[in-house]
Image 1 (tube, rainbow, N blue to C red):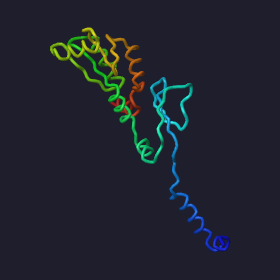
Image 2: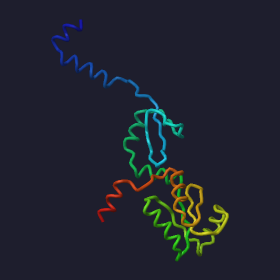
Image 3: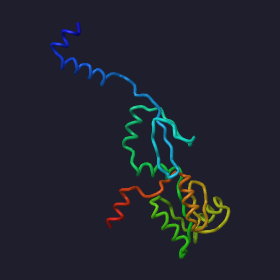
Image 4: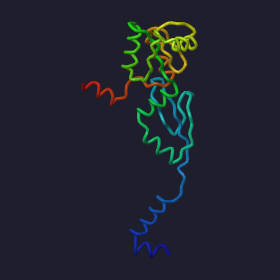
Length: 177
């Protein structure tokens, strides 16, 4: 029966078949694997990461897929900053404090500078978190690094999932100024 119709209306038949495939309730279910590599790059794949790295698996749905397509570097950084906030405990006229602040600014990571010089509540906060009164003290997601120890700060940032450098668009804006 389909033969004669196909000969008379070949384009219509093809259109019906394509429409049926496109609009049928076929589920695009699957798993999406997310992990952060050693360089701080976030990867989304349909297979688990190599070498047994830690990862998150999510059941894929159209709703989640749409959200992933619109995710930007800024939203990723915001998510990381919410999960592992950075506090920089400082005092005025402190070269080491200025070095850490400059390093974090150049790295493009958000942080909160907290001057403990004349704020008793911030002094208590630092003592509770770090168990000693020393500045600069950089808290990254619960880990405290004292002084300007670039390698230790970098390591803590990587462990918390921060990207290894500013997003490309931000680098271009800086280089144009």
